[in-house]
Length: 302
Image (cartoon, rainbow, N blue to C red; front, side, top):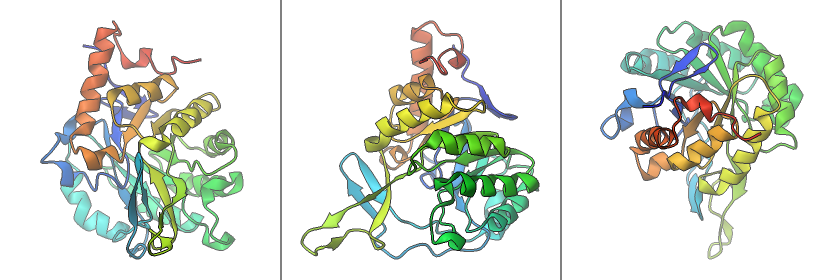
């Protein structure tokens, strides 16, 4: 069988399949459906320094080939995570990674610093698609300056593997990726959701409570593939690809475009065992094509 193991900085993955934040809970919710230890990494739901209530309902809407959400990072805060969730997940035999969000560089850093002390958390994924409250609500990840400020602040206090999750709602995502790399990011993951909208024509109003939300699912895959390819050719750090991955073929496409690992998101809602199926499918494809390692196909497309 072909070797599936890959590395993201010092983070060793059994295989390149991870779960996307916000679609897999804390992993525990899926334990009855899929062997968690067979997943390369589990990225738990977004965690902030202080508790967040999230947005009003409705905050999810189905679309053709995807879904919209405006959940708003609802969570009970990092201290609750440390005291109540961490003891339940720290011994799961895979990489448990926390997605970190915030409203200022100081806010991100304070949350990351608390997680730095946890032995069972080998990495964080920093979500820079959050609104900068000091700059009129524009997401940090939509400007070089904003992205750099977050990565720099977190890097000063966080000493393990830092993956930075990039927003696709930008003019030049490669430029943002390079900025993150220069400030010390160990990896970048992309793409986060695309901004979208859905309308109820009978009520003559948006389907979502705050009008717009993040589009995910198969509809975004072609955009995600293009951006992963562009970023993989722009930076030297590993790239994690996500956006509409539902099958092993989808995952292989991302790997060939330059992703070292991938994340499965919306597909988890349709099939809670899809991560294992994708991992097994990658293995079968590699064996059928005479590959000794998954690394043989990473970045295969020039």
